[in-house]
Length: 391
Image (cartoon, rainbow, N blue to C red; front, side, top):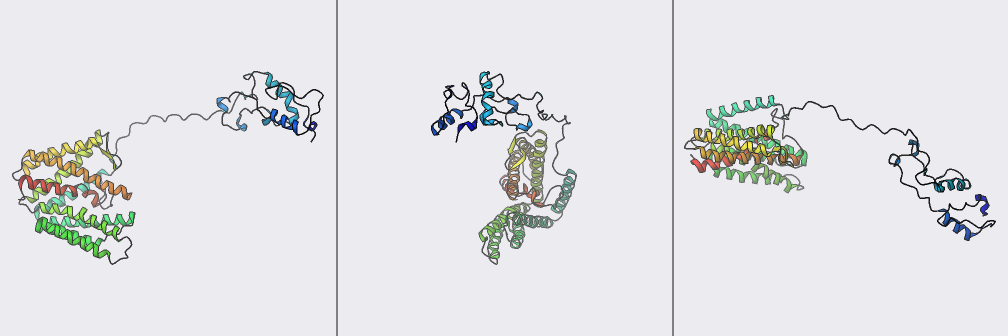
């Protein structure tokens, strides 16, 4: 192709570092010149960096346009004369097309929200309903405890059965685990009664028979998931009815009603101290991955309240008990109650739920009230046996 169709050859001083164009009067053509010509026309003029306000915006938003052969809209033959002007100028004079004097305004920076009055801390539950339900349960428990011991054992059995129902229901809903409820409920009730009637020996025998019943009952269904289901069933049998059996075993002593009352008082006082101190002064998280609401300050509150209550209760309510034994008892209760609460929080976090049930307004379910009581029962039973005997 004849190069005359591209227009006049480029002027000297523009196309490359040598600033040398073709000889005057020459009519170069052919592949050799085409290669040299392409080599001389490819490098772009060196230009300074873009202004800060034009970095990543599009042309239609007021950004400067780059100059040079690769960025022109004009025909190629019209470019050399204009580009000579750009070459002769300093880089800071006019390396780009003129930037609009009134560029499009940037969006306003977000303004800080008007200051709001500090929000009061919230308990996260309906305290009115929680207090009402708690007082009602306390009246039923104390009345049954001091009127007829067998009635109190019946209250424990009902709590155990309902707790097993809540636990197995949530396991099936959230994980697809089908722990056999029927043998668990029957065996759990038998464990509590055997513990009250025959002590630790009766409780262990009932536990063994309950485990065997769970294994056999699950055999009536397809084998898929058998190991998973029976493992969950054995865990439920130990976690709820077996630990509750120690409450019935406390009741066997001559001052059994008072021992159970001390156990309940210390557990409630520990939870109350943890809540009150943690709500008011809590800053350092105790176990944020398990229960974000619990704080180290709350744990110290639980220990202090429980030890004070333990010293008073052991001195005045337990036969042959002394205040220093109560201090140790209160410390142990605070630790076991906190661990029990964290243990159930771990279960609920794994299941992805907040409460085990909705039976008790303001509290959740029965298991949400038994979480700190269940692991505390064997601790109190053992320490009281060590301090003052089995009675």
